[in-house]
Image 1 (cartoon, each protein chain N blue to C red):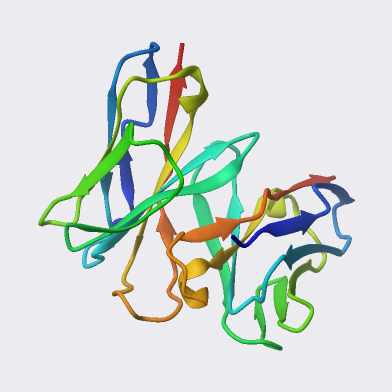
Image 2: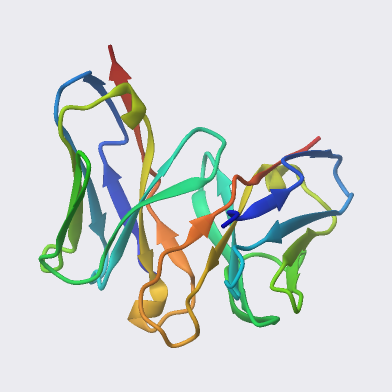
Length: 114
Length: 116
């Protein structure tokens, strides 16, 4: 089965600074989702990357998919308190011919210090 | 459009009991999937339903079951509860039909289950 490893596990960043979260897959990445979660709540969709080399941006968040490296990165520019939360990457097993739903990484806990 | 609605929001049960959780997907979505989230294991796939049929199932014991109704609403049931079943149970709906490519999953706020 596919495993996703996220790094770092936790991150404390001063407000206004940039940061990057990485998601590395044990198998070929055919596509990747990025979600954000507030503690004890549901997941909020951020980005969906469908092919190698794809890069998407929304407001101050940019995500890239490097298929060859089996890796995706999420970059936040000029961080704000609203960016705090848990960031999760997820890969769809269906795209690999599997039937295990989405496989998620363990998440990166982001804290923004004022 | 209303989002994915999960009820109840919180639930406290004792070992050996059974529990039923409910999920109402976004109108028009026929695919509903369930996930269990714990601090140790993270998010794990339970099962997926499409048009009242279970299409996929994760690696969970038979105590975990689910169903989907004709209006796409879904329920999951856990029988003979164990302490380790304490978790946040998340439901997600999607407009994706079987055989289609990537499609966004919309998650509910979850049901926090505590087993004492």
